[in-house]
Length: 558
Image 1 (cartoon, helix red, strand yellow):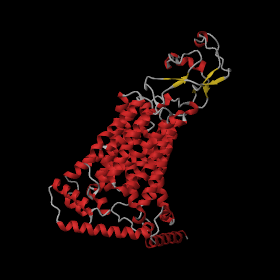
Image 2 (cartoon, rainbow, N blue to C red):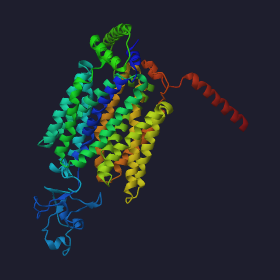
Image 3 (tube, one colour):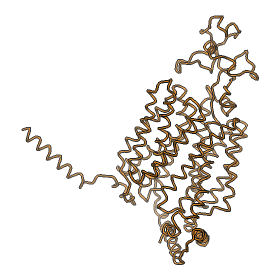
Image 4 (cartoon, rainbow, N blue to C red):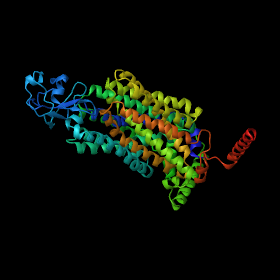
């Protein structure tokens, strides 16, 4: 009898599991705060050069009317608007600004040294404090990009730590680190210390969210794992929307950074509430501690565990340890095992591309809400809200219509809706936002599907390696997403069009992957190579039929 059978005996999703599961879903909200807050922490409002005759202490963005801008700032031929990063080297008298003198378009241009920002939407941000505009505009994208580098590094570091030291110590180590560096980021005196602090916070989101997710999933029965896995993502979406609430009430970016960090203090009490993973304890031979947790769960759920089950669990744990010892003596599986055989290589590369696109498009759309026009806070809330129906779609269709159907269908819908922004008239901004939100809903469903689909594609002997490599490729997509959004300065729909083209391409290519619903999962490399591969027995009858049809046709024509 395995541990999954013990869960079945306890109740696959009994009162004890529900209580702990709910508690472990809540940290996903705080992790969403940190992952999405960059939209507001690094918000870039409209700006213009501070002119020589203006006083930096009293100058306001609106003090220079827009109709005067062409007399002050040279026209940018790429975007078709005045380039507010430079200004004409002139004497700006009231007569000149009011249009009583001819504009000197041939005058030399001077690069700005100071800027005036529009404070109608954002009181300030890290961008306005450290002037990350014009030639320094890449700095804001780089800060977001390095946050995602931290997420990548954290998945490696905290993943290894949780396997060695346990789920619970790793969770609290990540949580304390997140609290410390979340506050440090809010008081950082300059760009470098802010970015490094945010990178460390990014790493801790992997430790907090993923470790909590693993603890939750290890105590839920197989029947409820799809529901449990999708529901925890919905808590992340709730955190997505709540981030806008913080931004609505807190207009100073430093206080905003501190405010989204402090709720993590509430989870410190979990030390006395949330148990270590009994499955992990058994794998480490700490059977007495595991039995205490199982007995407590049985008591809360109102069931009794027969004593022989404990003996069977010990035998199973010893058998797993023997297998692990034998496996450790064998050459370790690597990603090259996935690329060595043609069919497995083709599927692996397609899966990698799916992960890259899903992550890049998901974060690209999530961080692009400020570029859509209209009410930026409302755009952000809608972008989070559409994720809920996206996840609900998975609950009702994933085990009915199949993984490939959902993955391909949602990516094709995302691609089509985002590409439609090309033809949206400039005066119909609501339609542009609607297309972007349909794309966000669809890519959310796709992103949720690719996790399950990938696990079922890779053979057991290299499944962890395959999932780890896929996750790494996904982080690359997230790392590049902030730079993609900078293209919105050239043409507002351009990031959406690129995301749409990628989604459409990935959706079409995913049709080449085999369906996995109700199929046995491949165990060996040979199983993985043969999975989804047409056998000669199935190909030969079709070939013979085609041959006879061609012969018949040629005979008739003769």
